Structure formats: structure tokens, C-alpha cells
Length: 328
Image: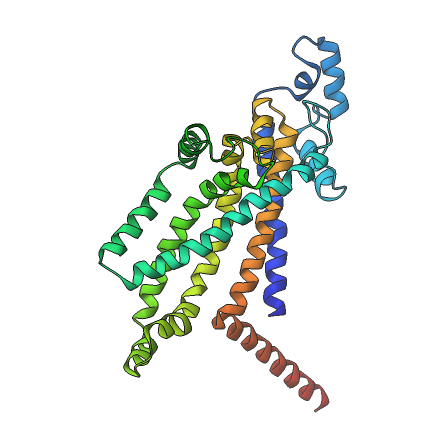
């Protein structure tokens, strides 16, 4: 398993590098002059040109890309914002906690609600409960989250005045954002849980357990669910990426000062340095979460264990044969 974990860790490096190169290339070809953004539209042409030279914007593309990668991954310097000259790392560290709480809370709700919903749907296949669950899942996947968020704001904040319309200064302010951010993940988790459970409950060992007269609850939770969790773990990791990306919209709908709102404001002001840094940070976080998912997947799935244990046994036999041949 150590080889499996090491392999997954090493795979993070090229992924993050490719994300950094891609976002830098996109921002490089976007319209707008960073020097003009910093100095303002009415700045003199000489001042703009001097600042461009100071920032290295007159260098060739590959030189700028190399300097960006060196500052980001060697010096861990994300630079300063073009709009307000504030260090980007300070803003990201201040805002990231809210984005992470929003994303991780959504994942917890998705698992708690989505898996039982899929299990109920699978055990009542073809019935009205199954159809109702799948209709709700289809609505959760199809309807845009920002539209649902706006409708809930109108109902619970403006009409009923039960919840605050913006901000997360109190725990009540987290209810609507977390709920809206988890809807799509709940639908995906329910559909995947239903599919996995339907595949498992048709297995021979489940049929044998029923033939022995075991209670249906024991069959579901002791035999069926552990085997159905293997694809659900991977779905949960992918849902975290969806929830993390969904915070960009949710934070702006509910006025949450997180990384998503920071990115949208940077897009509006063409603050390319902020956009690049925020995308790289989110890519690193998502890669680390997927690393944890892959490690958990390796411990849950016996096929991965057998694969790497077989390689280790083969390597030990080869090493032993070489030692015998050397001593002969």
C-alpha cells in the first residue's frame, strides 16, 4: 500500500503544474493591461510603460510563465492584488476558511442524506417511493443552484424573515448556503447509491443470506452496504470538487466573503493575479481531497490491496533469486 499512496502523491505534482500553466495562459491572452489596471485609465503612457517593464510584462510569454511558476511553487509568493495592492496570500488565508466550511458541510449533508435516499429507492425499486426519489434527484441535478438560492432567499428571508438574507455572522446564516450547495451532490449521491445497491442486492451472497433467513436490515447494512460503498467513496470525492466549485456562485448569491466571491470580484476588475492564485489554491485543495479519497479507496477495495501485495511478493521473489544466483 505504501507504493500506492506514494504513486497518488506524486500524481498531484503534474496536475497542479498543468492547472497553473493553463490558467496563466488563459489570463495572458485575456484583454486588459495589468499596468493600466493598477495605475488607472487616465495614467500617462510613460508611467504605464515603466510599470510594465518593472512587472516584467514586456518579457516573452515563456519567460513570464517561468517567473510565475518560480514565484508560485519555489518562493510560495502569490503576488499582490492589482486592484488594492494587498498580498493575495493574506486574502486567501482569511477567506478560505469560509469556503472550506461551506464545501465540507455540503459533503457531510450529501453523504447523510444521499446514501439513505438511494438505499430506500433501491429497496423499493419500481414503486412510488423509487419514482419520487429519482424525480427529486433529477430536479436537484437539473435546476441551477443560483436560482434555487434566490427562491429560498425570497421565501425564508424576505417573506418569512426566518433566516438572514446575507452573510454568515451567525449560524443561521449558514443554513441556506449549505443546503443549496449540497442539493446537486445529494442528487448525485442518491443516484449512485441506488445504482450500487441494485447491483449488490442481486449478488449471490445476498441471495444466500436471504435463504438463511437473516433479517432484511441485517442483509442491507452488514452485507450489501459495505460492498456498495466502494463506488460511493469516489463519488463523494468528486462531489467535493463540485461543492468547492459551487461556492463561487453560492458565495455571491448569499454575500459570503470567501474565495469564490474573491474570484468573481477579481474577474469583474480584471485582477488576473488574484484569479491565477485562487485557481491554483483550489486545485491544490481538490487534489489533496482526491488523494485522501484514493487512499480510502485503496483500503476499502480488496482488489487494489491484492494488486500491490502481488507486486511486492513478485519483487521479493526476484530479489531472492538474484541473491541465490549471486551466491552460486
